[in-house]
Amino acid sequence: MVDQTKEIEVSAKELPLHCPTRDVALWCSHPRVFLDIANTGHASCPYCGTRYKLKDGEVIGHH
Image (tube, rainbow, N blue to C red; front, side, top):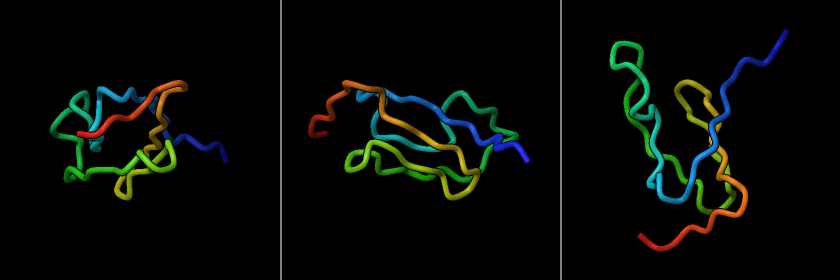
């Protein structure tokens, strides 16, 4: 079985991070959930399983 879960790289200026992103069509989306990527540099959506990863070298400032 092949893992087909998407992984998306995000930059610090795309924070606060939420899933689904603006690129997802409304008809195929789930309720918006905000994801904390600041501590570990990665997060997974509890609804669809999409994985998000902070781009290498990105620095998260205070919002």
